[in-house]
Image (cartoon, rainbow, N blue to C red):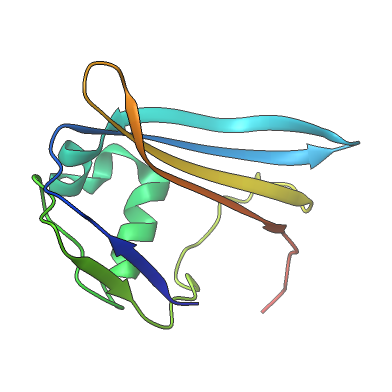
Length: 125
């Protein structure tokens, strides 16, 4: 897949919320939900283990900012597969949802929203 992010004006002091849920019997069971300083995360991705795996993979496909403010530009990541991301073994084989939201300012104005849905299947290699 190709990912494109258009930053329209410089962004600083961003907060990011990342969540992962599985669908079990028509209900969403959140198994991961974390909010943190996105600018700090860009400087030190190890603050979020899963996010660090994704950022490391994205670096293979395009320019990842290393801190804030994020400059007004277009960030493009081509042919992203996330094959390098090793999922934790405790994740169940089921349908899932993954959300990423970014907020700015004291009123937590939403400046980015991404929702991903799919199915997780175990494959023996």
